[in-house]
Amino acid sequence: MAKKILMIEDNPNLSETVSDIFETEGYEVVMAADGSEGLRKVKEDEPDLLILDIMLPDMDGIEVCRYLRADPKTARLPIIMLTARALPEEQKIGFETGADDYLAKPVDPSELLTRVKALFFFADCAQEGQKILDFIPTFTKEIFNVRA
Image (spheres, helix red, strand yellow):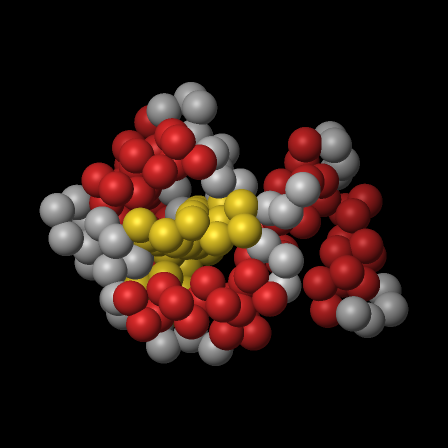
């Protein structure tokens, strides 16, 4: 079964571009255009990972992230913040709020794809109870296609 990614982004052009990239890689992609719709889709669609803009209509991404981290059902959902806010102080807030990764727009699609694959890999290993040092060689091989 394909991993499901929810993207909460109010820019339809970016949403479409990212969706095309991930669907080509075999992921299922669900879209939401604002924070409230995104929270509703998290509950309905149960995504495996969230790509979250910060500057959204009605509820910003920081508030969405806080809400998800406070709920035991979604507290461990991998979250990548993808935003135009690139200052170190803003990144710090994103990580303190609970983001697992933080990327500034514009982003290279291959970098975003690599970050998503890495988060899925780490989440899968954590579910299997593996220690970080035990799976670094496998991670390196699978994500970067190199010999460890």
